[in-house]
Image (tube, rainbow, N blue to C red; front, side, top):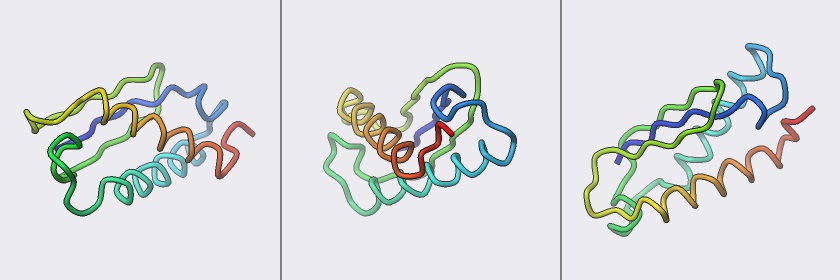
Length: 92
């Protein structure tokens, strides 16, 4: 499974280039941790790649696994985004 994410800048406040890159790195690390190892088919079996961009809107694209439940994966991704923003207080 491959995850391609676009995160709205409002999620982390008004980011500068460094802030956006730091958030992007923290989120990728959190997603790799959450989806690391072997997963049930409903969660995409395993994570092959993840890309995160900070931009004008939010979007989650899931590629490469036909038996996965996209609604569950998107819910997990939203939870990881929420916990990542809460940990480092990205709104400042």
